[in-house]
Image (cartoon, rainbow, N blue to C red; front, top):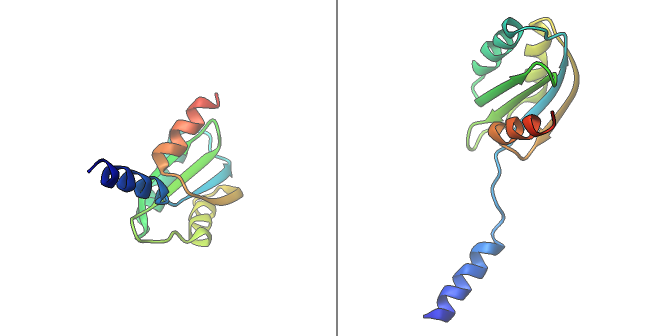
Length: 108
């Protein structure tokens, strides 16, 4: 029995951890909570959006995909630009919005 448990533990450790896929954007022009709300409202309407976080101080917008869905970076950038802001950098990361939020808070 102990051997079976050990084998199962090794097999579980060998499985790749499935992290959420998110798009992280660096955005210029956001200066107030109204800016953040406008971006959140636009992007939250997108069908693949599970969660969104806007950090005004770090000029970051993080968007997490729903399980099994893929985010369209170009569409996200277009929504931000149409809202009146400049997208400086866009990257896909294997992190949840909660992870990105925690990471940004530790980088004060």
